Image 1 (cartoon, rainbow, N blue to C red):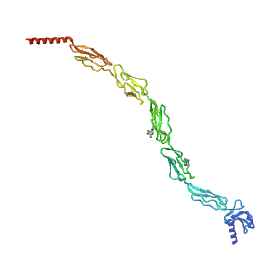
Image 2 (spheres, protein in one colour):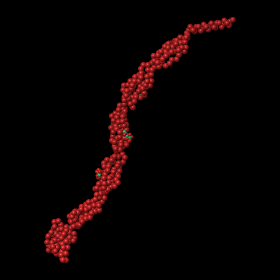
Image 3 (tube, rainbow, N blue to C red):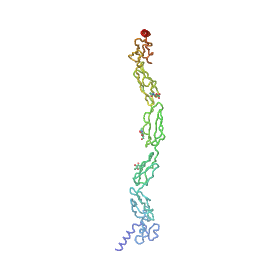
Image 4 (cartoon, rainbow, N blue to C red):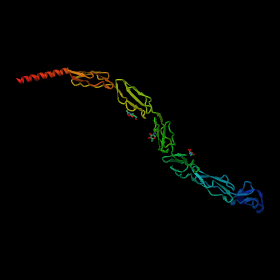
Length: 377
Ligand SMILES: *[C@@H]1O[C@H](CO)[C@@H](O)[C@H](O)[C@H]1NC(C)=O
Ligand SMILES: *[C@@H]1O[C@H](CO)[C@@H](O)[C@H](O)[C@H]1NC(C)=O
Ligand SMILES: *[C@@H]1O[C@H](CO)[C@@H](O)[C@H](O)[C@H]1NC(C)=O
């Protein structure tokens, strides 16, 4: 009974290490089979040195070392379907963790090769600011996002955001901050554009050739987006438009473009009051203002000494008539006409009649001789 128990225990212990049915009677019989000994007591076959960790190999012609099972690393797993010599164990990490060290270990005669790798939290590390810009991120672990921005006057070219990938690397690549440049503008037809620079904040100023007027934006600014704001203006020929005739007169002009002159005149009997010429200015407006044609008037006449003048009207074509008091004779023009240049002729005079003069003298002589006669007596 005791013998039976011993035999079964012996078998349980060694059967796993039995190498086929290679029989032996002496230790030297198993020399060609690695890591085996001859069981001379019970089976008379070659057995693996199982007490030292050896088991029969797949081909059943020798014994391999068994490296034993491996334990999972923190935050990861190890997979080893077999653990005998030549087996491979493969390590992997949980999401968000990256394997540091070799991911595979091989079972060798001396045990598992290498050492257990570790699972470290994925960290893409900090990013450095690009020239003329900044990068910011709340964290640097897997899934974190880094955002780039550029200083004022600079425009981001490339990836504005990057994400920390499972591999521990930021995806995309570092963007660059390039100086904002709106590029040069071309001259409009019949005009010019000038700007000291084409970078952000620069101003471009348009002007038109003489005789042309700017219609639209006279200045444009280079915006942060690298585009000039507003739109290109046009240079339109200055035209003051035609003028209408004033009442009782005419206006004439050869052209209505800048620098053209309009000349006013009045109908006969009318006098121009105001600007007789007007010039079309660069602003597209005739300077001065429309004159008026007022009826000619020669003005009132004053009475001559010892006479009168009668002029019911004083406008052009009117007639003024002179007369003298009694005993006076009119010498000169008795009538004058109001002409465009004024009253015709000149003022007449009223001269005392010579008959009347003689009467005065004889009357005086008579008076004087009467006084003389009276005095003598
Ligand atoms: C980076 O990865 C994120 C998330 O997968 C994706 O949305 C983004 O387009 C990627 N960026 C680049 C530059 O590859
Ligand atoms: C362009 O931008 C400047 C500065 O912001 C502003 O003063 C100007 O009015 C803008 N011009 C147009 C045409 O939008
Ligand atoms: C109009 O402009 C012309 C040319 O500059 C000038 O000689 C003239 O005196 C101006 N006339 C008036 C009424 O302003």
